[in-house]
Length: 339
Image 1 (tube, rainbow, N blue to C red):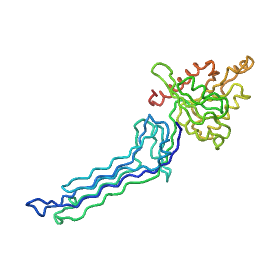
Image 2 (image 1 turned 180 degrees about the vertical axis):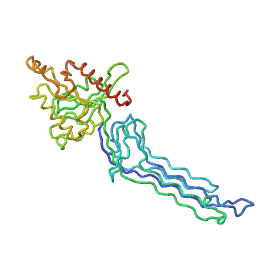
Image 3 (image 1 turned 135 degrees about the horizontal axis):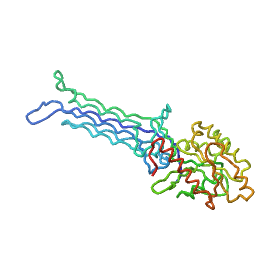
Image 4 (image 1 turned 120 degrees about the vertical axis):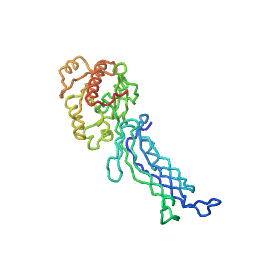
């Protein structure tokens, strides 16, 4: 399935029904009073977060959405039926903006969370509503009011506990395929991963967390180079960042700093997140390189892990470290655990 994380749609709430002009006409009451009913309200356009959706693909092919108009009022004081709302399902993590002003209308994070982006028009009053002691037979009613219409910009930011960050072909996809049921495309050339991939990792019985495999970054990604700029937004919601660098790199610390600088240039807040440095592809390292790697220390305050996703070396310890960092962050902010 194609991954789409941005979309622009036009929504139109419905017009309310017209009020009715009517008078009672009974056998022995030839000139009864007014009994025109009110029109029904127009339907709203509502966006609702749905945990079963993970892309905005549907909105790429259909741009216009409209709710149902309210029905007109009828005689015998019958109020018209209100129009049905148009409810659009979006993935959890969708930010909703006014397309004209850029104002954030909602940040739909939780399943079932909803926002009304366009309100339907109110139904017009029937002539029965206008009867007074001095005007006992009003011959006018109100028309229904029009509904709101606007362009809405949708932006999806994936909800993941851990974000895998690294240069192309650093082993991110191989790792997530080993520790979860996710099956991203894996090949021995750069930019194999073209879209983000989510995997659920079981840490222990009844406990798990979500890992996001993001397309590889290159130096200058925050300026639009490579593919990274399209997906940097997805790491903004992660709790923990895992920086992955190949063990065969000429300078592991320098590569780590380049990645960190790209995140810092994109969002200073992102670079302040809890992070873990992972040196990958340990199966390619000879004894001399392994001895050199043992002297490496994470430039930050967290630990360094050496892994081979091919042989499994170091992977269980890394998963434990991921879970420990995620669990501490969840405990601190009180957010609901993923499960």
